[in-house]
Image 1: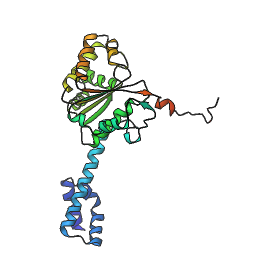
Image 2 (image 1 turned 135 degrees about the vertical axis):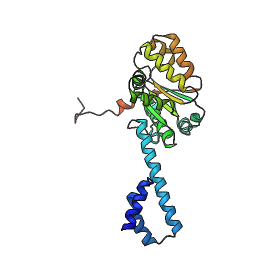
Image 3 (image 1 turned 180 degrees about the horizontal axis):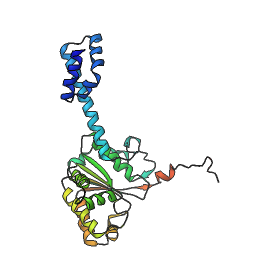
Image 4 (image 1 turned 90 degrees about the vertical axis):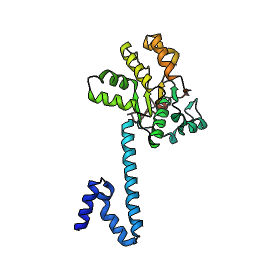
Length: 252
């Protein structure tokens, strides 16, 4: 008993949390299965590495801020056109991420753009990348607050160090000029250092109207469209097709 408690103390100091939590079970299993010393110590470290990898994945998934639906294995190609299984397979390989390509997803609300963006973020997280997904409104808020809020500055710096940043619903609402300038500065800093996924329900040619500034819109597009894949989606709104009701009978 004394040796077990001593070993748990060592495990805690060395941050071997799986060993610390499961020592009794591992010792009991070793007494039954009689592994060699080398087999036993190998199993101890293998379980520790597995546990750390899972914690790291969970941490990065939490930081990515993914919506509930994000697994592209469940993507229904019957709901939208503009992307097929082969194109999706190529996107999921993430080769474009290594080449700092951007992905622009354009579609009317409710088809698939956010789902696909979240799915690609999920694939990148599983691949060990630093990834963040936010709405444009959230990004603009971070930019506005970063000089007066330490937490906003921390979030901003995380974006700068990311391998992939997904910005959902860009240009959904009019953007003030000072906010647009801050947003452009961020995109300029990410340019050719970080891949960006953009989802929007407006064609890039309409962004100048939303920004109310042709020069700003042109500069933004120059960065985003330099190395990019533009995917235009169309089809049936997934949310409308799968809407829920609080009423038992919806015939009337």
